Length: 378
Image 1 (cartoon, rainbow, N blue to C red):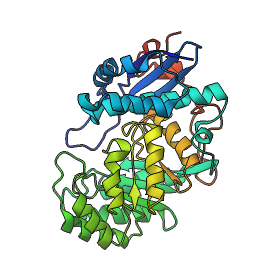
Image 2 (tube, one colour):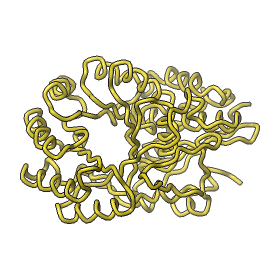
Image 3 (cartoon, rainbow, N blue to C red):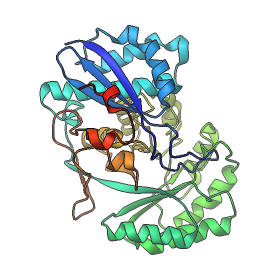
């Protein structure tokens, strides 16, 4: 089997708000789908956290090392792509695009062997996993109403983040968290994401320590991105001193970027994004690296239904990955697959058992957001 073609298509029209200083519009493309086509007719799909134009440009760079390759060897092929592009853009959109290709190659391997990707990644530790509803912060009453609605629909874990948190005053920060905990009750998981990778983030270690102490009063399960993503020494100090677990790493690419953070003990939880970090091949290696040092991997999942499917497969294959992020209300997650994502009575998601990623794209629904025929020619 050989790779004969790679196609891409950006999603537009329903792009969710990101909470960033430079806020997204509905037609902004930040999620691009990738399809890897083989000479035997098997097609694998992946997802990339970057614009369509950047993904296309990256593919022009990657295709000479990709076309004609064996798609049944995802880890070797992806590593070759990383190594042949050292001088042209290690990290950034090149690595993001490799991420989508890598996910698609694992999807092909699963389809060719009749196995779910999680089994091919090493075995299924679990058949279902708890998703946490991830949503932007708002003023306390609106935040409370949103969370109450989600709880009534069966969600048992929640992450609130960005918005005004850390950007107005400490009193409002606590009012938002207090309202969130009151809305979801004492038995639900609550996580808080400060959004330290925002382009205009200004808070420092002392703010993060004070805020961590406040969050501990509300039994917050982790404090995410409370500092600038480059502040390694401050993260190490924060993790040592904070009463709540500290998480981060969503902006990093490739396992090598995570190594000093893991070795120096900067995180309790690492959060690589499968659509940025280099795909499932890199994400799995980061998970192993973290596990050997007593650190959990919980994937960052602000992406698409394909990215969610990849995270679910990884969660089945890593012993400590017992949560996945689920962007609440995103059409790109909920509206592009033939089978809807459904919580069971315990608030859990079943990990797809079918070959590959275990999902099928709905051409008609997907067509609302992209040129399906460009991605998946009939």
